[in-house]
Amino acid sequence: RTMRVVDAGAGRARRIPRSNNVAGFPDGVVGVHLLEQMSRHLQLVDGRVVRDTVAQIVRRADGLFAVGLTNELLWARNILLCTGVVERMPKLPGIRSVEAADLLRSCPVCDGYEFRGKRIGVFGNSAHGVKEAAFLRHFSNEVWFIEVDGRITDLDHDIRAANVHQVPGVAQHVAINHDRQAFVTMDDGEAHRFDVLYAGLGVDPRTQLAVSLGARLDEAGTIVTDSHGRTTVDSLYAAGDVVGAL
Image (cartoon, one colour):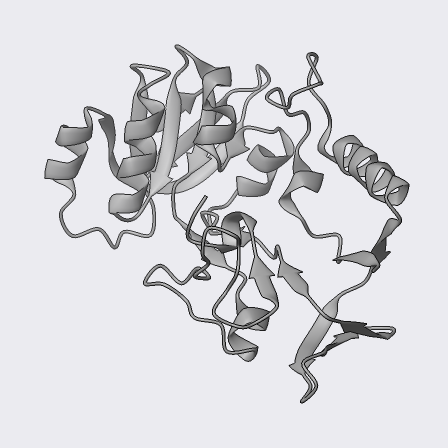
């Protein structure tokens, strides 16, 4: 049996400047370097990474999967989908500069501890963002909910229950100053300073391939799997953020 990992090169790990929470790397590790080490490990067990994109997967009558890549066709007896999710980022002027400065984060579980006692801003437009802010309260008393999009109806009760602060108004612009601090300007013209910003707008699971094969999704739009990672389609497995369970 052979193993191939088809990687289109768009994984979130490639954008990690340094992860400080990976076993075996006490000084942290750059995302690209971690992926390179994983690829070397895979090669030691006769696997390899293919730099390509999966355009479609078709199930044949004999049970084999025809996996259509951009440049070749693969045949597989078993498939493991680790297609992940796409974060919803705030569409604000200046947001790219905040990302480039590594001051826009999306996974408080991964790196919230790095900002213990800091002033943290959480962009949100729903109860999901409030939950993200509430989780970050484990690390700091200075957590602020920042509304984007202006679509919120009534989250006042949720925000008070989460014991987080709220910036008045709706965010209009973000910027970075010379001290590498983020400033968020609201619709009243006031600018508010933060040590880091989090995007609490939710994610969109990348389930197109799973759906095309008939796999069942849950209410959140993630792939349903059992305790062994099996989907509702024979020989089709899924793992990671694209599934609904850990």
